[in-house]
Image (cartoon, rainbow, N blue to C red; front, side, top):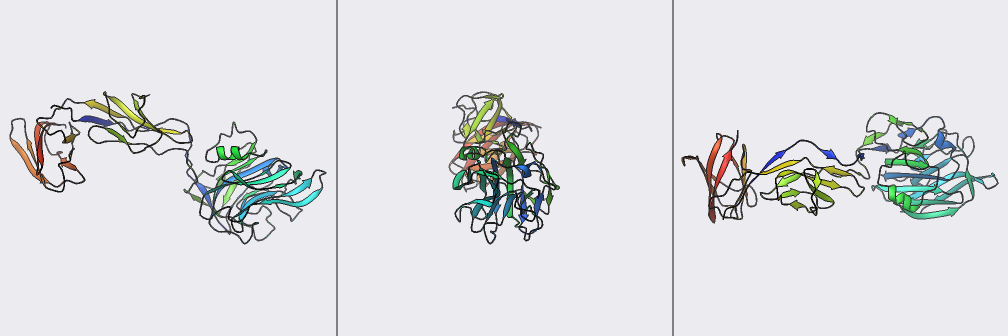
Length: 412
């Protein structure tokens, strides 16, 4: 039985990205004693009085001795009067949202706090945390789940201390309640976010141009230097003081770049979910499996889409039947690529750990090479033909359990 045994693959070194999704490449690492982000003089987030929400991704490596330690974002202090707010994670895995309050009659009420149960946050684990104030209630959230709340009707005392990420804003107080670990994706809103909103956007780079009420947004994705950019509406730009850039991040919207391999008859993508095979740049209907057997010649690619909706497409491969037929070869032998200029791959269930003899004859049936090989892997064997001259050859494979004969083309 005659069969087309080989396909010619030409890889084009290009990559198409389906959506304008930004890789999350960096976070900031805080040493717990001297590193923080400083916003300098009071900035717009210092003037927030509520409603308000603060959220961030944190990777805590050590707890402070109580819940007031491990500052995430802070505008609060008390040297010149109780002012501002703070989101922090200290004690024994306790999340705290605290601010200097004014009651409904604008009378100072000192500190108002909502605090989670102990062990709500674990060490050495990326965790999304948030604190919100609606004007009547404070809440804290861990990974989108509300873990504690307390009632308070009033507002927040505006701050004159400036703002910090990773340290107490009131520089006159000691110790500075520094954060230990990594922080990423810090956001401040002038509205109270719901659990559904927090969950929906936590693992995404949000679009600051369409986000309603986003006053401060620090992706902490710069990766070098000391400038910390605010993508929110408030222009709260800061400086990285003694922090180290880290490539450890809590999420990445951009999926891994898919690659295409070949096993002799079938295109293979190493990813198993959310993939789409394309021919000539157009999706192939129903072609969403890990493998795809080409039914026609053309340029094939595979697109992988992340759960966040971001896509990457592989480099295209040109698939073309070359019309090289087997000559009385057992159907279980497969040989590719053919034509080739470098290496021939042979695959067969007959190839095991036993030596296999390979003979090459030129077009005049003269023997040009005879060698014995031990298969390099399970049922596979590679033959280097880079030293052969351009032309048509006959190849014979002979093993303990069977043999096969092929016509091959060597390119130069």
